[in-house]
Image (cartoon, rainbow, N blue to C red):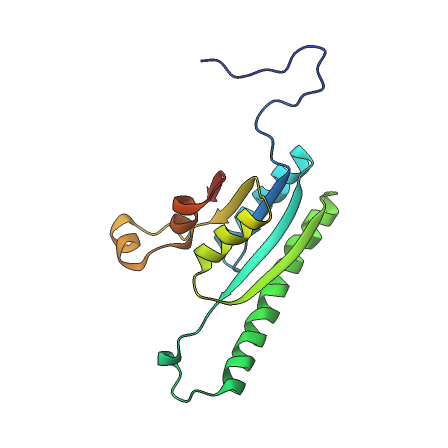
Length: 161
């Protein structure tokens, strides 16, 4: 099978159509690479880009004192860190003429589920995520956000290593 090519007189661009791209960032090197790829793709296809971060819910089992103030401080600090990572991507997108919007979700029970849920709700055409590049055995033990997104997303997922 050959590659699909646009007709001579058509203004159609070759390849898939990704009007809305979601990139999930977490401050890691791999998520920074994923963000650069997402910006490149959004620029190429004229896509709207959402730069997204999920702060996972903290289990009470890990906190000796169930203090509302402690949880609020934790979530506030995590949101501030997320906004720094997002701002970095937003600046890159702006410099490339890409329309981008930020979004942070706080206290989600599952990062992967929240990414998939949000993408479905916003009719995202492509999700871009980074991976830690864990080996097979470790991935089985630890689990992976990127694996969860790939397994449950309604749309294509690009995992950037």
